[in-house]
Image (cartoon, rainbow, N blue to C red; front, top):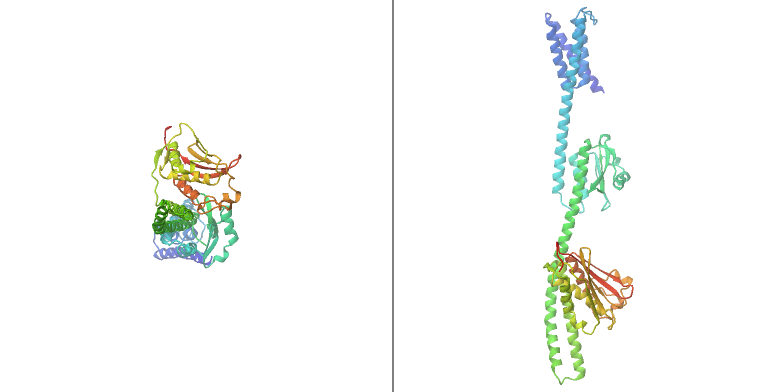
Length: 479
């Protein structure tokens, strides 16, 4: 306030100085004096502002009335024309002062916006160059406090639950309000008041909130800072997810390579054992007890070889080592391929087949999908009594073809249903049945590669039903 008063007194002093100068010259045209004072008023408006310019205009009018218009030596003016002159001078001075002050304000605002944009640009560059990691929130608030030059900043990340803060005046920021802003997706305060709480949104959903204290920024700039913070958080999260996915992929590839190597090392001696058992069984003079041992050796060798092959196959599926060869296939043909694989186990088993007519083609791998169906058939054969029938149904449901394998066994217990498709998992009731818990896991991986779905449900009439749903071939025609 004192500074403002001093500037007003200075403006009056400038006009007084101009008046004194022309009084010292004596014979001077009144118009010259008025124009000089007008220039002084404009200069004051450009340098200081409207209040100072109006004060100078009033002082100019009073000096003119006292020194130039009759009666001289008195601020009273007798001539109406002189009143018009004084009034016009004051009006022109005020209007010109307002225009000059307005231009100055706009220039100042333009410079402020330019500086604001530069800070936002610098902040965006710094955020894009920042490394992703657990400290992204800490780095983010430090960058905002340093580049945007706020007194205090606090950031709340809803997904991690972390709270980060920076600045010298962050005590004014209430943590409860910050959390409320994120929870309610609502703004509190405003930039003009010097303290604002804004929710950070991504795709319309709040992912956190940010508070800025003493920002000195426009609402638009504050929202830009908020948006940049959201982009930085999501970028860091995306980079973290990508790094994790790459680590998982490399881990799966390594496991696949190791499993291939181990499988090769195991299969070589197993082949020798299998050959030795076969030679012994070919001897007609082999003693009965030795023949029984040789038979067990051959069966267990086959079992181990099958387990190793299945484990290798799952590892390749998960690591992407096996790629789908998609072809337009008839569902009935895929069922026939699966039945050929299971023919030895189905020879002595009642079997029912129900394939709907005029089924459309599906996009499927003719080698992999029959393996998934064969594993469902094998599962049904193992877990149901020997004289009960196995049934396979193929139907069209919407834009998917559904393969269902049903049995008359005991069904799946509630505690087993949660993990039945996991690798190596075998329920308590299955421990007495030969197997390694890989069949359903392999089927699941194959179905996932086809973009389909696999599920299980117990039948009302008894037994379990395992189903596979595979999408149709685009623009397919009935086969």
